[in-house]
Image (cartoon, rainbow, N blue to C red; front, side, top):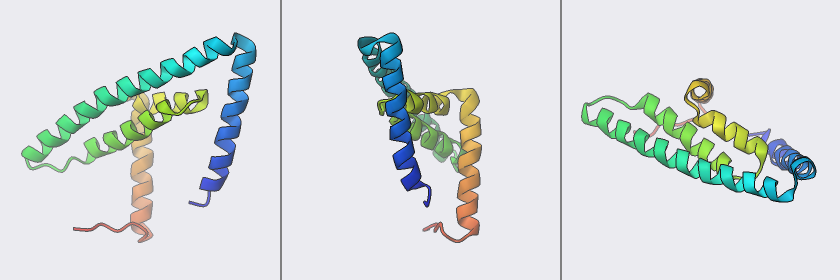
Length: 128
């Protein structure tokens, strides 16, 4: 939580710098087109993977299994989709990495590690 202020300042500043550099190198209209393309691609990928994840969760629940891995997939898809819809190339790259199957595994392990840390510190409450 203490890094949120730093992230909220650093990420938009870096995004603006990259967008200005991109506008200077490839031009304004191609930069705008790339931003729109990644937004549309992000919405499509998030919808497709999100519906598949919802189907897997329902299937696992019907068989009496806890859908832990599917829930982590859903978190990655949600965050990745939001990042792809956010204008900027750095957030788009991070969003694509969260949606790509080979790199999604890394993010799932990272999220699971953070959840375990929260639970061990008793800063995360599970309501049953």
